Structure formats: structure tokens, C-alpha cells
Length: 167
Image 1: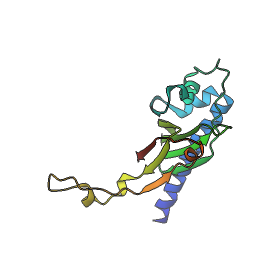
Image 2: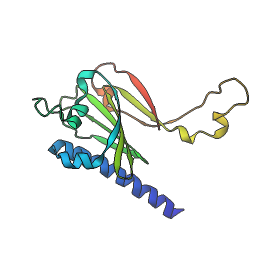
Image 3: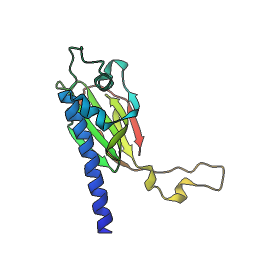
Image 4: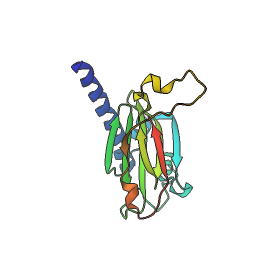
């Protein structure tokens, strides 16, 4: 049992290291490392104003001539197995962001990007099987406790939408 737990911790640490290496490569504009870390068919989800798709512009090269420089310096990093949650904000703290990365075998396969959004992460797999199935046509409520909640979105000084991410 201890060996299995150690393996989970090692995998979690590796996944977090992959994501942090991506941020370092983005900040130094190391295109080769970015290409090695990201899957060529990266799945992308974005929630926020279209004008705030800074990460997409960085990854696609669309921001290379842009005088605006989006720094991706994580403030908080939390990992749940293959999911790495990273929260940050701009220098003036007027924009907060959360990136939820999925890492498989050392490669990032998915990113969910949230701007000025309060994000709550819940784990659906921890629900007992009886809570998810019913022999009647009635839908039974399922309580899914949260495992992480963004904190920087509360500091932007304005009301922001709230979303739940189930992992």
C-alpha cells in the first residue's frame, strides 16, 4: 500500500513539474520546449472575454508582435493526479486566471482556461455508487464536495462569474 501511495505522489509531482516547465518555457519564449510538452492535438477550453485569450496567443505565436506581454507566473499550484490547477494574476491584480491542465505520460493533453472567474473544483469519482444510480425515474441529488477553490478572483474588485469543474 505504501508503495502504491509513493507511486501516486511521484506521478503527481511529475505532472506538476511538466506544467511548471511549460510556464518557464512560455516566459522565456522557448518554442522547442513548448512543442515537446504540449500534445499536437491539445484540447482547449476557454471561459472569459475573447480579448483575454492571452495564453492561446502565446501558444499559437499570435502574440509575438504584440507589445502586451502576458506573464504566466503562477501564484498557487495544486495537483490532483493528472490534473494540475494553476492560479495567477497580472501585476496590477485586475485580471485573475486559472488554468486546469491535464497531463498524460509527461505530455499536456488538455487545458481549461478561466479569466476573472471564480472556479470551484470537485471530484465526482468519490461519490458512492448508490448515490449515482436509482431504480426509479426520479433523479437523486448527489453531493460532490469541493476539493479546491480559486482565491484570486475574489480580489479583482468586481463581481465575477462562478463555475464548477468536475474532475
